[in-house]
Length: 457
Image (cartoon, rainbow, N blue to C red):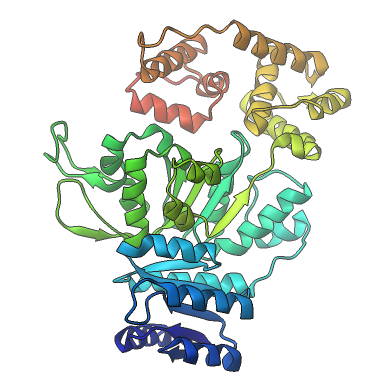
C-alpha cells in the first residue's frame, strides 16, 4: 500500500488516480495526526509526503513528520513533493532520510518511475552469489573479476539495472567506471535503445546547452546547421555523464533543471521537449567534499545518487590481476596474430605486487606495450619491467610547454598526429601508446578532422 500525505485534495486525488492506473493500492491522509494513525494501522510500502501540507509553508510540519516516520519505520521509502523554489527544503529532507523528491507540477512518468524503482529496490534484497551464479542471470562478460568487493558491486548493479534509478559510480581513474555504466545499460529494460557517453570534463559552460540540448541553425553565430543534443540521442535509452565532478557551476544548474523537470529546450527554439532517459554518472572526485567546499551543488548530488557504487582500486583486489592479464592476452593474441602468447608464473606474481596507480587502464597498456616490444611468446618479468621503467623515465623527463604557448586542444591534436604517424596509422597500436581505447582514438580523429588511412595492426 502507498500512503499519500497532503492537505490538498486535488494532489491526493491526482496521485491516487495515477497510482491506481498501475494497480497500486493507495491510502491518503490530509493531516499529520491522521498520517501517524495510518502509519501504525497499515504499515505502508511507500510514502509520498508533501513538505508543506498546511497553511504554514516553512516545511517544519513536513520535516517533523518525516523524522517521525523514520523513527517508526527506518526503511520505508519516502518521496517528498516540493516546488522548485523549495529545493533547499527537499535537500534537508534527503538528509533526514527521504529517498527521492519530485517537483510541482510533476511529470506523471517521472513519478511512476520513482515509485516503481523504490518499491523494487525495497523488495529485492542483495544476496551473496558466486561469479558463475551472477553470470547466469546477468550479462557481465566485459567485466573481469572475482574479488568479493567486485562481486558485491555486480550483485548491486544487476539488482538495480532493471529499475530507472539514477546511479553514481565513484572510483579512481582507470578502475572501469565506463564498463560498469555499460553493464547497467546492457542489463536494463532500455538495452535495445541508445547508450550515449558524454565526458562533461571536456564541455565548457558556453557549449553545454548546444552539446546536451542541441541547437537549430542560426541559434548563434557559428550555428550553420541543426545539431541533435545528447539527451535527444539517448531518448528512451541511457545517458552516461562521465567526469561529472568537472562540470562547471553554471552547467550544474542547467543539468539539475533537466533532471528535475525532465524537460529542456533546444538552443534557439522555444518548443519544450520531454526526455525519457536513464542517467548514470561517474567521477573520480569526492563529491561530498566538493559540496562542503561549495564546488558542487548539494541538490544535484542528491538527484544523481539514488544508488552509489564505489569501485575499488586494482591494488585492493590483486587476486583479479591474473584474470585481467589473461583476458588482455587472449584478446591481443588475435589482434597481433600471436597465438602462443603467455605470461610466465613469476611475471604474473610480480605484476600482482605493482601499485598500478592507473589501475586497469595502466595494466592493459603495460601488457600491450610489452607484447609490441617483445619477440618472445612467454613474457617474463624483464619484459614488463623494461616497459614500466621506460614509462616512469618518460614521466620524469617529460617537459611541458610554458603556460600560454599552446592550448590543451593543440597538445592533444599534436599527440594524436604523432602517435598515428609513429605507428603508421595502426589504430590499435596508436591508441595503446596514447593510453586510450580504439573508440576514443576514433572519436578524436573525427573531432579534430585528422585525415588518415587505417592500416592493419
